[in-house]
Amino acid sequence: MKEKQRKINCIAEMMSLVIATDKKLVAQYFFTLIVSSGVTLMFPKSIEQFSELLSSEQTNAYTILYLEAYWSVIFLFGAICSYIRRLVIEKVDVSIMCALKLKYFKELLSKKYEFFSEEHSGSFSQKLNRDVSEVAHTVTLEFAIMLKGIFLFIGGFIMMINSSFLTLFSVIPITILIFVGRTFSHKLRARRVELSLLNRKLNSYTQDIFRQIRTVKLFLAETLELDNFLSLSKEIQDITISTASFAANFFSILEFTAEILILVICASCIYLTKINPELTLDKLVSVATYGLYCAVGFRQLLAGYAEIAKASGLYESIQEAFNDCRIENIREDERNEEYKGKPVGLMLENVYFKYPNRDNWAIENISFSLKPGEILALVGPSGHGKSTIFNLLTKLYDPTSGKIFLGGIDISNKPSYWVRDQISIVSQDPLLFSGTLHFNLTYSRPQASETEILSCCKRAGLLSFIQSLPDTFNTKVGESGGSLSGGQRQRVCIARALLKNPSLLLLDEATAGLDPRSEQEVQSVLEEEVQQHKYTVIIITHRVSSLSSLADNFALMHLGKLVNYGPYSSFHADKNFISLCKV
Ligand SMILES: Nc1ncnc2c1ncn2[C@@H]1O[C@H](COP(=O)(O)OP(=O)(O)OP(=O)(O)O)[C@@H](O)[C@H]1O
Ligand SMILES: [Mg+2]
Image (tube, rainbow, N blue to C red; front, side, top):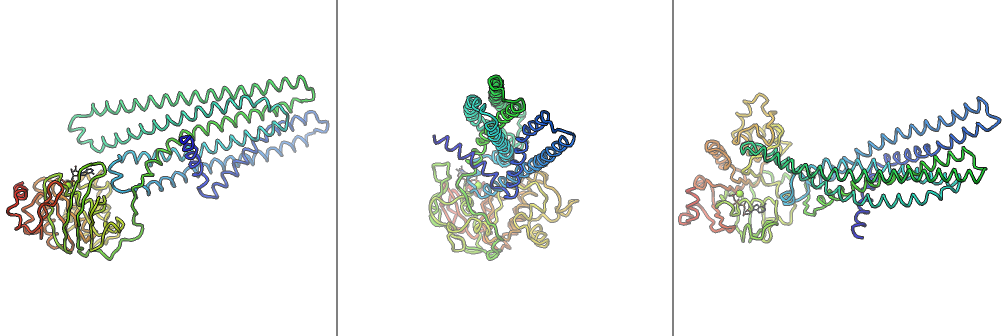
């Protein structure tokens, strides 16, 4: 019962998408639908009137021409409405599609970061692009077909009743049609959900492969991937075919039942003419045509409903993913300039944190503080919670317990954009967008002036390279920045971070992914930058000794705990620290 109610709610919600579009479009949609269906329903009347002319004694060229002109005007009006209706359907389709995509894109952007780390990005693109388009298209087109079916069915039925009591003979086949329609549409919907899940899996899979194409090639895994792809697409093929055969069954049984309906009506007509000589041929023709409309209308109504029921499975799966409640407010106004470029103090107070899908603490009872402008080196072995601290400082995750203060303010009471406004981060993986250098550099502050861009590129040791390129700042960087070297990509990330004019700069192994020479070059750029800094800095690095004179304090992490904190000189007896220095 609950499942049934959910399905009805889902279908009703989809239908309401049409009503919720532009009021003028909806009015046009219904008006043209009523008129064009009305005109279609008039057609048998026109034939009836023409056949009446045959038997009338007053028929002459003028009366025939008059009747011809009269009906031509009505049908022309119907044709115009039909044209507008088709156009309006397209407009409603595209308007629902754009509105849904915008709504879901905004919802996605508002999700907390942890939501994304659980799902595959391919599955979102498929939902946002293919699934949403399909839902919008089905709901608009099939809703129109359904409504037209309802008009034809009800109109045909009323006209039939008006013409004769033959209508009663159609009750039995119509009942059968309702039963067939209900059973099939329910099963079609379930298959549709299964198919959509598989398609999403294939989409995520191919995205992964092409993102990792270098690894695939270097490990000669083309044949393996081909086999994986084949088995996934075979599954999709099987379900698609079985769904298609299900749908084909549905429509053929429906068609068969509709034809039986017509036959029953015809047989009844013949029988009634035999027993009632007052029934004329023109009346019978018009009753039969209305019967036909009734059957066609009913068929359209069921077919439209079946398609909407099918798409409702898809709609439900989109809703489920987007209804995840882990959301955060996104900034819609300008950046708060109050904090721009002023070094900020920082304090962590008994902070504990566990990742949502893990049982053990990633960090435990961390407390330390930094004065504005201080430089802290965060060191420790791999997997011991250094980057996790950055994840909490940037509010990508919230501490399980404990408090973090930025500039004396508890960040748990502030929206995440308030915190991120003040922080710039450079991480180990220098991933760029596939636009131009200029786009990537100004991503942190699109309104930055040319002088500021030039200055930050200079500070990041990037300017002479950019100026040597034929298209300078308009050079395209390729997918994920693939047409730049690792060192160049990292410098772009540094310049981007500096351009934001942060109050707190976080450097997470910013040189670790580079070859020794680039590492050395980028490291000296960073050291020089940090020495002349106007911000508070936390550096995570494995180059511990190189920071001996640069960092005010060192924090040593071990198994998620802060085991030592103080200036470089205070670590001379710490074995863990000494072994890190050797690395
Ligand atoms: N998104 C995540 N979900 C679940 N566990 C995570 C996640 N990110 C990190 N972890 C786990 O948290 C622990 C600390 O990881 P963290 O990334 O903070 O280590 P790290 O000190 O930065 O290591 P490295 O020096 O290798 O970068 C590890 O055990 C890691 O497996
Ligand atoms: Mg790390």
